[in-house]
Length: 386
Image (cartoon, rainbow, N blue to C red):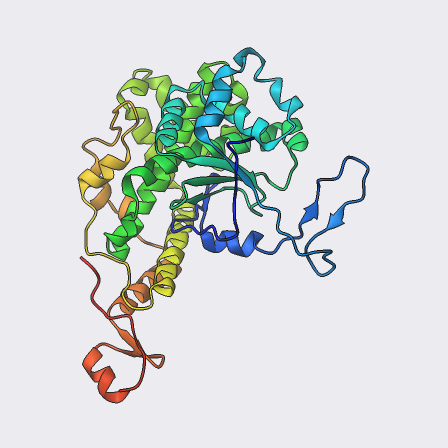
């Protein structure tokens, strides 16, 4: 296709890994998992010998890179396709583009996801598939690229497996919500202090999962109950259960956002989910220190109720956390940091912000460091930006 774009090994992410069922991979994880895999030449026709291109017995050293298609092209193809045959379409997958077109067709039956796709299209995002070595997706903010994990499966196998097909679809939906945030909060780690950024990323992760639950419910209403059953059986199944129970008591809560607020709250009820999100956020903050040789890219801003509530605005303008931002900031249920490992990790980051390093020795006074090591390399002044 003329509108496809092949990726490169230089793709880097400045964002976050999500340690949930629908997670985003950070560049650190992407490089570790897929930078040096065994790569096979699959360009032969069926029955031909497969040539090993990488690994200890590689034949030449060639890296097969994923291709990306503009969301505009994927959406255009999806709009021209017959939705009546969408459930049979997976059994005829031939290319990655077929898979992505099916995702767009299915997701487009949810008004919420349709709006997210159009927003990503307006901002020039492209999408592709690749084996990331773990379930999730990868976002290259600078290049406006979304890379979704294919679980190590070819397109024919994806089409036959309802579980992996639906996992890919839910990952696609969550990635679109994350892209929505990227289009509005790009570089937020440079504005907030580390402890504030930790709170911000919790809210962002909880919102992405909450929006995915709502999208699954809309698809259920459109006649695609299989995707809702998949979500109920996923790691976010507790959130989906709360969603349905609340709607049974108050059907109108779907229209005023109340059911989403309760679903959002349930994200925090799983301490393992919260701790894992915190751990990955702290790993990203460590990467900021590693990548900034002189000044740490942290600001001094504090998360405000308006920032919290702004993260939970849907494309149609529904602000499902309206009036709840202050409580989220103050309630230990949302703001507490109880995991001792994450506590220690955060304290180390805060300490590192207050010292300068000369010859691997920490100092709180840069002038004293210069007196003791006049020829040493001064690394990381203490004052954060802002």
